[in-house]
Amino acid sequence: MAAEVKTRYFTGNNLYFIVVKSDGTIWNGSSFVSINVSNWTTYAVTMTEQSTSGLYYGTFPTGITVAADYTLFVMIRTGASPATSDVTFKEGTLSWDGDSELGSTEDSLAEVIENTDNILKVMQAKILRT
Image (cartoon, rainbow, N blue to C red):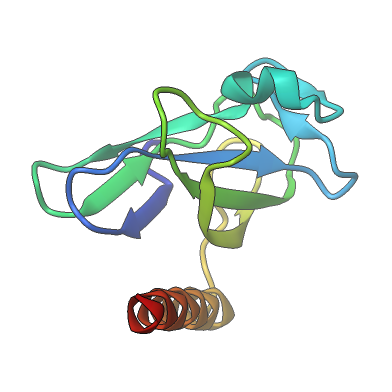
């Protein structure tokens, strides 16, 4: 499979996502490990903008072969490389059967809409303060 993780955001940005198991461990490109902030760059899975559309696609790591629900955090990279100070743009759950996504639900769509609405409210509040 490819491009299981999709989002829409302003064009020209650098987005990535991280994968977290229910036990709190994080995917480092080869296995799930305890979080160590000095290794943050190894946790980032790059998302690629499609042309200049603002549509960003990322491929869920094929090395994750255990069926489970994984938490994904889509991050906006603000510096030269991924860092813990990057902004979490969106979070959600991906149900994985060990080989491919099991599919999404209406609840996950509602979460996306709610997250987007929350981000817009934060941005509006910041604009009003300036």
